[in-house]
Length: 447
Image 1 (cartoon, rainbow, N blue to C red):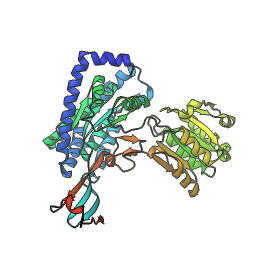
Image 2: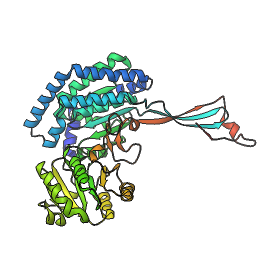
Image 3: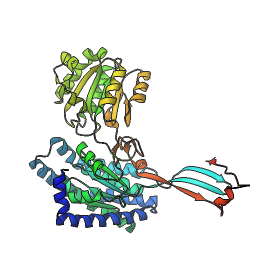
Image 4: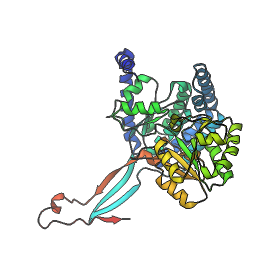
């Protein structure tokens, strides 16, 4: 955000009002987070069941609100990839419901004893999973993200403050109302567990509330993610770019490689786990690229390539910027490489450490690729589109993280918990373990 426009916003009466409202909402979220820690698994699953019923009952209202959002966004010139993400029709609603059913089947992530240690006889230490607390989510376009995130937070015992893009305002409001009516109807302790913010001013204030908000997860453009990381002291979990690769090794089965590459690019090009650069070994390039280019041409994919690629197929010249481009559309950069090592070097240099795949029949080459490519998901002989919380069996995801602390890859329930230590004793005191004739710690690991 430009400094001048930010100063104007912060000096306005509207901003002062937003500050008070969002701080009040955050305090209510904090109080809700304390209540949520004690809610039983049966109640959490009942709340998720109630959300499914509410979505089914409110189906027409949800789809109608989304059609109005789409119409307004199209008139305002919203980019085509964002329009695709904004669409929330009957099929997307069914996918959300199926995702919630899958989440219900997941075990409770809270109260799991991760480690037990006997410090001394009758003095036992447990490391136990617990909710993070209050999570702020800032996302663009995708109404299904609101449902995924809200239901994951309910199951993991976290309170959530949601800020969606203005382009999805009507859809988000209907979804948030449906969720809140459903969960509060199951148990009053869910009150204020899911709150929807509405203005840009509220986001600015939210990012200042490091004493009330424990984690911020942005989902959207790399500009959005970078701006949030720069604007807050709250820990931020997410990824700025989704620059994903598929590398076709010299011994790859051409038909398998074609299926994997086509799905990685074309199954849904507007998402962060779609392939943006295809790397092809020079030994297979003349056999593989013409047929692959033909398939891409039928799907309307615009191809850009290095000099070696352009000698084989009709591609536009790729610039240095294309190797770091996240197109989120039917565009693809292609580079021919001379070795597995060169492919790995390219991915680690230009990629975003998100999701990268190799197609090969050689296990040794696949193992080297998966060991040395520094990404949150590395795949062998399958589409990059599998890098997803639902497809990974996590129930759903709040986003995909390229961080190397706390959580990495698709972040599901396990990424929304932290842990605490619980020490149980029989009146032991530290003085007994110091000085002359001190008692000795056993530090024995227990099952």
